[in-house]
Image 1: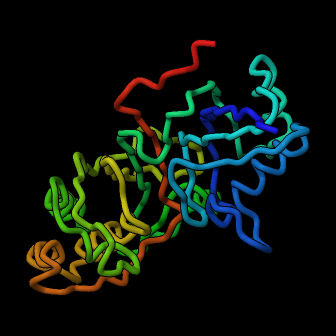
Image 2 (image 1 turned 45 degrees about the horizontal axis):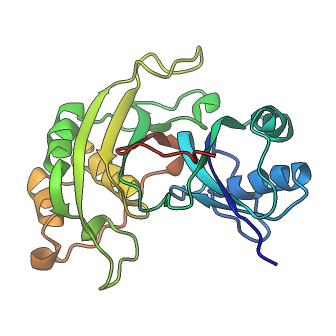
Length: 268
């Protein structure tokens, strides 16, 4: 018997500090596991979920999207968000949901992603900062880090920044925007007096790419490397540099996902 399938786009946000990333894994707690467990409690039918991008352990998301495939009956969108949020843990929140057409492809839809990385430097800070920012004990040369960051903007071969890339991995990518500024977005009375925010924008990033970029920025801020070394990392065919300094995950947030084309909903 033919069963009709229904397609939905769910917008969520989460604090990733206590999760082992997005993707469901055996014996560890993940965001996908908690979301699907809550939905299974709510729905008496088969469903599948697909995320716009996987996040690593302890990485947060201010905005990300999940495609939901429902096998039997359409969802009741008048109550779905309210009931889902009641059943989700407090560090995961559903923001919106809409029905989409069968032709919508979450992974292939043109989009722009913005990641943010929050850090402070110079001393050890309040432990309550740990879920949100990374603290670097050494004083960093912020101006030099800003100069280094400018080298990443544009289209480059980021193979040196692609974790476990193989010969078939597509590593020529474009970073459309990158900046380092004083943090004026996230505030708390236990935050240090001064903290910093790094932004990366692009259509897509490889596994651990942002954290490898941040590792290089921290190294140049500490005076361990220079701008010439960073230029060489962007010419992997010539220099073959393999980077290993992966910055801590807890400072990283998927801040925003923008779709570059209108998302069409079914007409009936």
